[in-house]
Length: 352
Image (tube, rainbow, N blue to C red):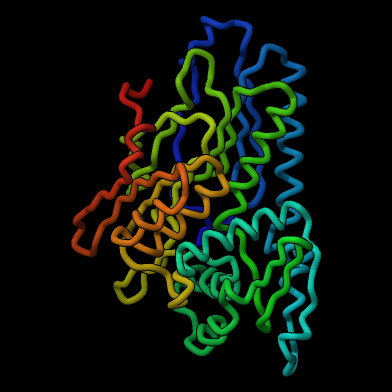
């Protein structure tokens, strides 16, 4: 699963010049970048007034920063961490003693969407995977596999079915000891969505928000059909050769181009299969386009775990979602899998 400090294959964007600004001098390009959730967030917009643009950028970044503070599994004071800590035990304890926790609107939105994706993917996506991601983060730092006993113990604290949500009350309860929630595979998409909303609420509709491999957009730049987005190839040092045009959608790319572990000749992705507890093998890059960034963000991680033969059927369960997957086996043979509707987003003109 994607994690904030170790993000997956990034999406390259063609955002420099060339957007017919000269034909519409009243709309100038403004942008701002800040580090949040362990990655660079960039907000790009077109506006007729510099002061209005500055206000919109400030509000968008403030919204992202607030979500980072609430949804981080690194911050001991975050709302997410406090929820995880309700399941921490130091001795034998019945799961029925774990408290019911009232959630903020933001944490509820992310957890409820996460559970929907978990159910649809039969657990290939699972935000309770935190005990495993903690072990594999250490494994990549030390370049060694996790201890087998520790891995087994971590697996015993993972399972989306043990995250109980009550929609009417908007509450959550963890049902297993020592659970740990990790929103690294979905929170950036949600933050991008929310930042776009902040800008639009300021009366500026031509906006795109990028968070590493997660992007959300509203109206396109002046005189354009969409924001031109380059999809990162399997080799992160190669320039993108595939481009899409995006408006009023989110797009997310997940893969292991830069984040993986090789031990005894076997490659372990930083994307973990929640059911096996280990990083998926082989190389892959999955790009999902969906009506919302939060959905695209969660779906691409699940698709990576499911693999090309099951991912297409999974993606089809979500209205408006489309997928492009590029896989490479141990012999170097590549396979491209594409949902039928993905081509409607593909750019036909050459990159500027």
